[in-house]
Amino acid sequence: MGENLDSNCPKVCVETFDDEQHIVNLDVKIIGEPTLVPPAEETPNGVYFLTNIDRGADMIQTFNCFRKTFDENILDAVQALKDGLAKVLVHYYPFAGRLMLNEKNKFATDCTGEGALFIEAEADCTLEEIGDLTQPNPSTFKKLVYGIPGPVNIHENPPLIVVQ
Image (cartoon, rainbow, N blue to C red; front, side, top):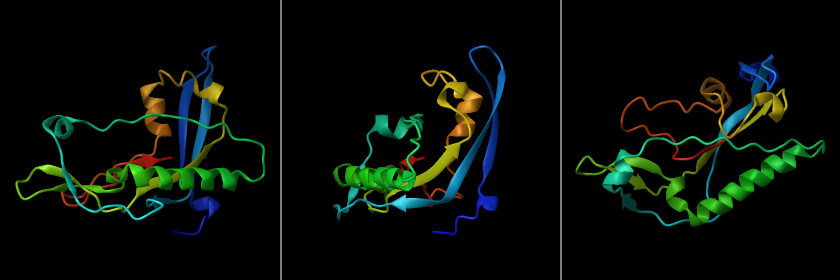
């Protein structure tokens, strides 16, 4: 989707504390452009109407890390993650769709098969420097996780799943 020019890659500087309460500066760099990963195979189209519980649900963010190996083929790992995501979306195809408003102005999932958003990023730190990932510091967590741009209006909806 775009050329990866290192000087144009966004960086986020985060301050956090290690176990001994020393401040550690973390640089997080987005590598390249965010891309859409569609399902690996054709999936059914259609609309799933959301239940009252679904309509009241808020966005849930989780933080999972993979340790970087010292293998020079790290791009193979990134491609493996993209390929795995594409295969999963075949079985969970509604997550490759978008939210929409139906004729009664209620939210539904439109199974468009557009895909999930994938962002490759790296941090110039160790997982130990970030701290306890089971209970991350909210300000650190917010800066380490890709921020989905909000829709300009109700008809512009971002992907249902974002993987960084």
